[in-house]
Image (cartoon, rainbow, N blue to C red; front, side, top):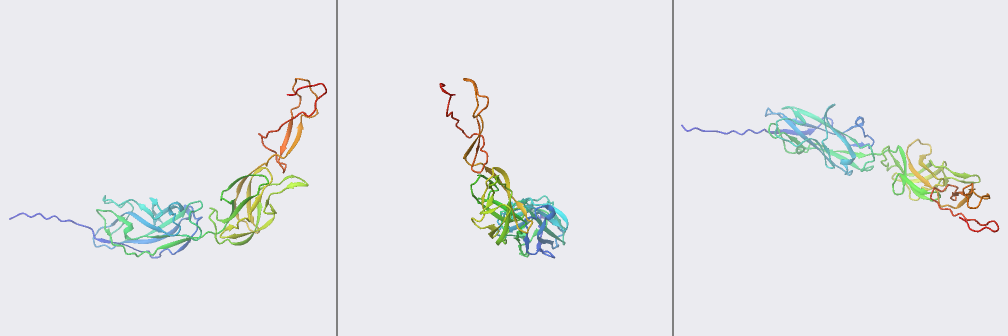
Length: 360
């Protein structure tokens, strides 16, 4: 009798699907200042169900969460993402890109679940949490980030796992819309810088922004607001005292400023400082107690306009010998600020005793 050899190839069935969670995450307001692990928030819940029939578990090596929305900068705006089963931590994201948050690694055939194992004929519900970076986001108030997943985004072991079924599109995309609530007032230059270096008496245009603690702008802060500026000092003595001012309003007094989408109107916050100093310009709304993001201002003296002789005049001395008192003058600008080192001063002898010649 002839001998027969039969080779049998076994393959796992496509029995695993992605399903909606028992209580899916609803669309939500995304608060940018939720920026620590203690403030993490859920952005997506979903189930992975192994339908059974092949006595084989679903060995998950990788889960990818698709990211979209008008924010368009998830890679920089999302500081951390974590995968959980209930309260149990499973994994931190291995990568956060603009289009996907990835947990785990590319599937292989080592018959081990690198990320999570769903037992045959059971289901597991996963929750994805994130928190934002502790700084100003690239996305702005009113823009959004959206999250979803599908069977194609679940990568399973290639040799000993139930296979994923075709995409079922059973997960409703969850959208988080960025919502900024003013808690701080920020003051910057017209170019958006937080430092300023100018000369005394020179006007400069500034901008006030209504922000949260991370300097995200609240676009709902609009219309007129009564502000009070502080942080710089006056110079001079009565009756010639020069006070810092915004427009024509002195520091410490109320000034009404119009806002649109959280930013002060153009040409509405013109600073004129007078005292040579380094200070922090601050702004507060009258009747409020907002936090403050200040502007570091270095105010330099203007050009020299006054000279005051301090020593060296009307003294006697011997020929060819140094005088006892050096010639010293104080140079100040229009407002009385001392001029720094390096200012040239020319001294001249306007008269000399009879019969003498030459000076040095």
